[in-house]
Length: 181
Image (cartoon, rainbow, N blue to C red):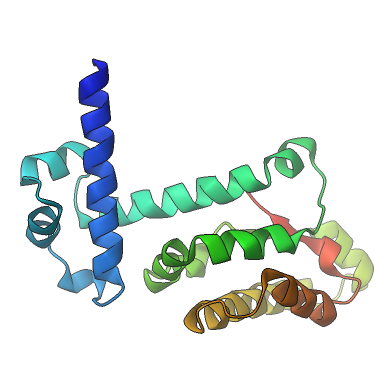
């Protein structure tokens, strides 16, 4: 493909995604039609279908981009196999990308999200190999709910304050959790 067409395709995708994200702030997914998106983005349906199979494909594309962006944030840790427990990076990323995270949670992706992973071996040491699954679920549910509350409030508290909350809640056990690819 030549450069002008690549640029036009990229711009079309960005317009579709921007319109979709804006619509999701006031509507549920089932209330948004491809026609609505195309009309507001000033694009035809052929352009939409050239890039997405349906509205769910568009939603999945948004999720994939956010997860890839987040993985890139922690790329060194993932590739080198270490865990810095730097949730400050995570909270800064959330604050800078609030609409994406609100969308991610609104679409229900947090039920099987790939943001946090749990070191089962370390957990076994900390918790004497007892009730690990419950500890893991408690952490993942807790951090997810804290992030959602923070987003609902417009991220008024600083990322540093949010990181402090996580550290105080999981005193000495934060090395169990990391960002996952």
